[in-house]
Length: 480
Image (cartoon, rainbow, N blue to C red; front, side, top):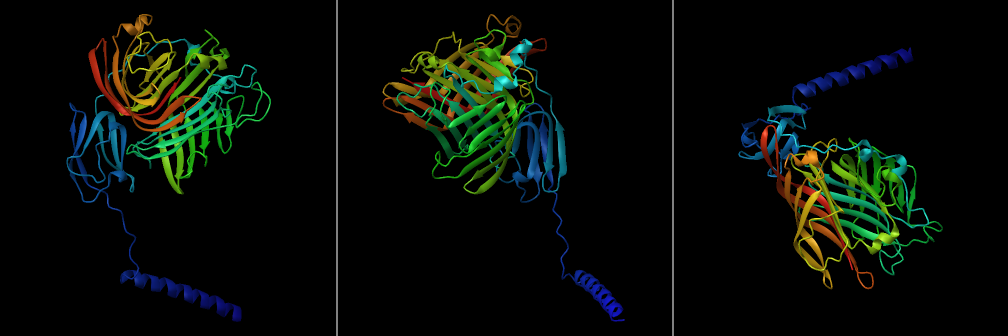
């Protein structure tokens, strides 16, 4: 009887709680769950100017709550959605959603861009094996070998427009004269408004003849398998995970990056000392461009979710090439229209004077992709002008503004018929500087750059001209 009474009492208590809850709700003591308002935004579409202009908007709508999908330029947008705000350079389908309520606000269709002619190339130029991705410096020849990853974070990331560079480098003995710390780690973060985190550090290597002894940088095969103290990279094409952290690089800030790279397209061999079996060359490098990057960045304890378009490159060479190479300019650029441009130039003479370089540039590369690496437009006739430079040390100068004009070379018979001409201006805007002075005399600048310019070509549909603008990761080196 007591057990039954307890059950009845429990049931009565539950019923009373339910009734009380209903009463409190009816009299407003328990508020209804607040429903999020869907903003009312109207746009004016201008097909000719390729713009969407805000015609009207409800109050206090943040652009960060609006997801704009498609190829367009959102750089002119402020914090709040305001009448007259413009989304420019719209191409194809543009979809606009309200992120908090996952509501479709509107969809607009613009004309697709004209298709840029691309290079036709043999299959072996775009074939990289897990063995090629792995280590090459574990030989008696003491090879120089570099792996690096860069990314420009997208506007809908927590770090919009920032660039990151992560690099693992096994330098040849003598690259840094009388410096017995030739293993390098680069971890940099740069914002469009001048914020800078990280840098570069070089540490000792205890090996002998490239084989025996401990190294700071450890690498294995097949695939990318790298470790530099607490930083590492691991994976096989088309996916890699990169983890970067080093308290010695930036003693004032905590930096931890975990980034996943996915290459939607095949790689491309830029150079190799072998004609066919590119990976067997003693001097070689390949790129994966247009990579999709996702992950997180931790700065001083604050976590940022990030995504963007990135680039992965792997190169190796004989240690004796240090005698020949006196510097380089390197840049991976993500354009506002969704294209990517890769540019690199190796200098065989000391860059003492700021001057126009020769039009014959066998160690220059310029690659354009309009579809994240699926097709590539390789321009081999490259004219480079150093527009402005900073003095590095003594008479040596480091460029911070470069003008490039590129066309198809006479050897590119098919591509030459389209009369492609690229004119771009690259400006280093926010860079980290590392200088090894006496007796080494080597300097590097790594960071964020902007690119502006235009490209022209002709095809069966007529003459085409497109304005170009974007952001990139840049790296310059000079040595005496």
